[in-house]
Length: 189
Image (cartoon, rainbow, N blue to C red):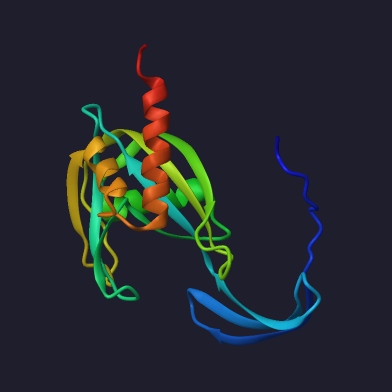
């Protein structure tokens, strides 16, 4: 049985002060009264885009990962194709753009499989993950800041990488595991 809980916000914001902003994020510091009644501060990173992840699957059961060096982590990262979508743009349109941009693929069949919050204790980032099928190959359209390697591999191998911590990006792990469950339910019994 699901435990009872109040949907009322137990936090009180006394003051909110912008600390930093650039084209992708803004940071603010709030003076708060916490749920226990004490005074405190809370730092919030607000994203200026939606996070968009795509899991392309071809007729043979292959998928595509993209690899790139992630500056904040100081390490190389294999991930599903992903990027940011302007908040005012439909998330599916952003997904179509990102898939084409990073892999050169377009898809005739799209299924939204997840809405997630990537790190909800410090950021308001909202992510959407799509399954892209009935693929057509084309040319990539990478941005100047992207130095991406593209890897086509069997979908179960990508899931294994997520399970073995070879893929650590939250959107990729969540998307791959959810897609695996969805694809398994489609198989004939």
